[in-house]
Image (cartoon, rainbow, N blue to C red):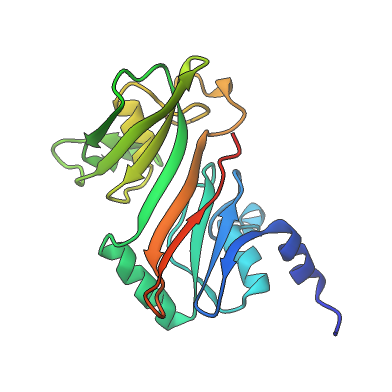
Length: 217
């Protein structure tokens, strides 16, 4: 077996690959890492580049905020990217996030209908805007309560920027560690939001895929 390039060896140690086959790769993004290349030197290190060092044909399908950890799907090749993009557009991909929300949420479950729009003077912040906002829907349920917070499962139906973060703030229970939307971001060392589960039909043969990543908090 020939010697592997150092960049591939580094990527193999730096990326937690949850699933890989000839059609797609699912990787577990750590908190604090960009999903895709960004501006400047700091933007050169990102999950997409790390995955592509291992799978040269890997292409972006969706993204997570830099401060959010968890599961991301990459397509292998243009055709698989087209099929997976279509699945997201048709809302045929189920996603479940786990978060630690400030305070004790009184109900056991519910849904948040709150249209979202960019807060242009304060970008990249988003705001609830009932006049100009895009329709946004999140289902939620309580997993546990304690230590002044609520552990909650979040299932977004739409995929707006910062949707889960703004929706929980809108309920009066911002996510711990959220520097944009929580009044006391230093109460946590990181944003307590993790993409824990993802389900979809395999783009090649249609078999049901359900992958999970244990929240690191």
